[in-house]
Amino acid sequence: MAPIKKPKQQLKRTFLKEWREYHNLSQEAAASLLNISRTLLSKIENAKSPYTQQLMENAAVAYRCEVADLIMRNPLDRGAVWSLQEQLNTAPPERRQDILTVVEAMLGPRTGTDG
Image (cartoon, one colour):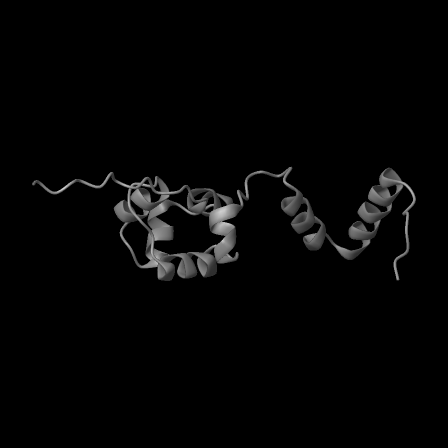
C-alpha cells in the first residue's frame, strides 16, 4: 500500500511586514538586522516559509516590540485599542493628562467602588 500524503499545513499570518514598515525599514535593512537573506524574510513575511523562535526573538528586538506583538498586533492599525494605549503612553506628560481628562469626560462618572 502506498504511503498517504499529508496535506501541507497552511502557515499562519504574522505581522512581521507591518512591524518592519512601521519602523520604516526596507526588507534589505531588516534582513541584515535579523541576519537572514532578504529572500527568506520575504518568504516568511508572506507565510511561504516558516519562522523560528530565534527569528521572532531577534525581530522583536529589531522592531522594538514583544514577540507576541509580531503574531497578534498590526502596528499600522492606529485605531486598535492597544495602539491607542501605546499612543497615550508615549505622549508627553502634559498632553497625556489632557487626553485622560477628555476620555474620562466622554465615559461619564465611574460606577462601583475602586477599593
